Amino acid sequence: MKRFDDHKLDYICSRAAGRDVLDLGCVNHYVEDEQTRFWLHKALREVAGDLVGLDYLQDAVDTLSKQGYNVVQGNAENFDLGRKFDVIVAGDIVEHLNNQDGFLKSCLRNLKDDGIIVISTPNPWFWKHFVLALLHTEVPNNEEHSGWFCPRTYRQLAARYGLELGEIEFASRYWKDRIWPFPRGWKHTTWMATLRRVKS
Image (cartoon, rainbow, N blue to C red):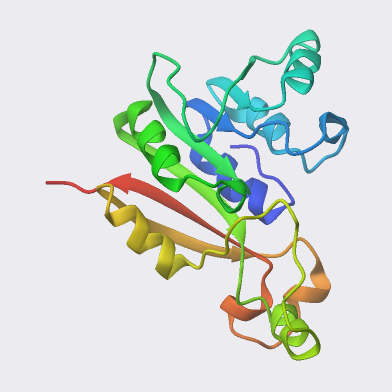
């Protein structure tokens, strides 16, 4: 299996290899990201058996379609593609959503019974956030974000939809973060996890 030198890409792609995959928020903000080596959708295209991308930005979807990508316009909070996937990828998107209920219900509608949802999201316990909290009344973050999630809170949320959260890993793209002698939940910028239906 192909390996990637970015921990987050490697985690997600290892679970998508050879499978039917839906990638939510595939544009990743800017269509120009297609040219970088960190663009998740391009990495997924290298390993997935079949890949569909979904994104809210119509112009970007049109541009990627012209470049040969199989992408459709849609809202990650309310979608139904009329088919089911082995893997649904939500890479750095859950923190942007206003409607987690619609997101999780849509994923379940489009997920095979034995399928998985793979998420990645910023780590709220990253050590720099503690420093910023000491210096500011509020911790500055991306203005497009609508929430912070730690593994515990997302596990509790997922359980309400019959999903269990497991295979948690933490990652940081930058070596200067990785070398700190802190616990993994403090020194990494991102956490990733896999969601599965709870077996009855």
